[in-house]
Length: 88
Image (cartoon, rainbow, N blue to C red; front, top):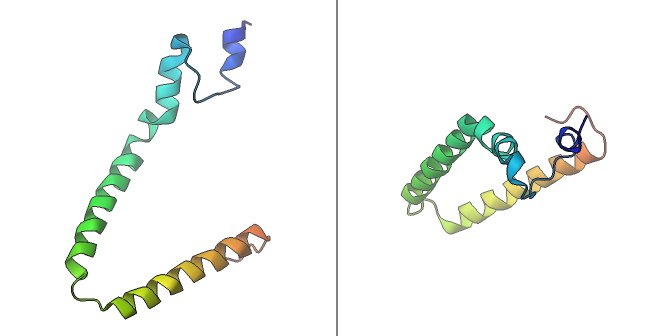
């Protein structure tokens, strides 16, 4: 077994060794192209919907909703971090 064989198990994403370039590219993105494509399309669609709704939602309501959403997500993260397993 050579050092190159062992180095695959110790993955360094910013390694510049050209012999392992294909391994890095496959691991870092090409294996997840469907997920990346879906996320990009979701970002574009969400931006378009947000732009369309911006003129119809009062700023006061938007700020209240954003604060509530952030508070709920923070509480969920804290509960999951402290070991509560029944958190959705």
